[in-house]
Length: 359
Image (cartoon, rainbow, N blue to C red):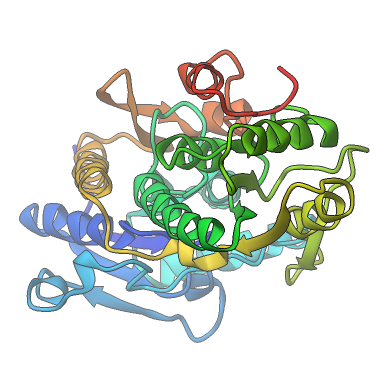
């Protein structure tokens, strides 16, 4: 017998476009079943900090406002990491918060890191959980797609297109650095869509000579500009990881490979002046495109349906075009989904003449 009466919903990790569509979807589907939905503010902090921070959500929260169609999270999110020696204590406070509100289950919108942390919290304190994958990196395991990726690709493609005009005007090679952490999905797909000349991703090694040879080839063809897309997780030729900052628990925040390559190319490549544009958090913005709105709606409705069926500790996902549920233990154990170097995307980039490294 289903004993669900109250559920919580929260967003954890970096924000992206489509989160509010999913939150709204959870509220709509749960309300139709007579459940009360508690929106937890600022990720897990809404349950671990005191006083608790939350609000009861109804369909009215989204019916006459633009929230459901905007980027960001209506509830706020949390993306600062947590030290391993603090996890047990935070998990206990999380459990206390859930019990204080009388929640029967929690729906978590998060990426692979968030799924790992929240699954740990919920299993330690015996709380039902359903995960909904979201990330602009598209690296959540097992599912074919995650909320936010398609819109981020659109934002990146538009930015690369815009950079092309100034590259042509000034006869330069322009580097566009995009997010993605250790996976190159965002860089590769936006580079293909925007017809970039070079794309560097963490999964494929490159050489400075390889980049220069491609730029020389472009110059000899008569074209006076070039566009290079690099993923923030790309290392130097020596295998060094570049970091522009650290988060609140001391972990490195990736970034800086674009500026690093600018220095090298301006020194060793005489055919082009090179400049870099780092897109940064603009990639998390933008009105969600059709694909993200549809995925968010499908995932939200499925999450509520799974709870009604009595399922727990699973993540909703799409596999081979079909909605399914993956055991959270399998999600955590599988780990990050990287670009398959034998995929159609890599093959397409090569066939189009793009330099994507030594492969």
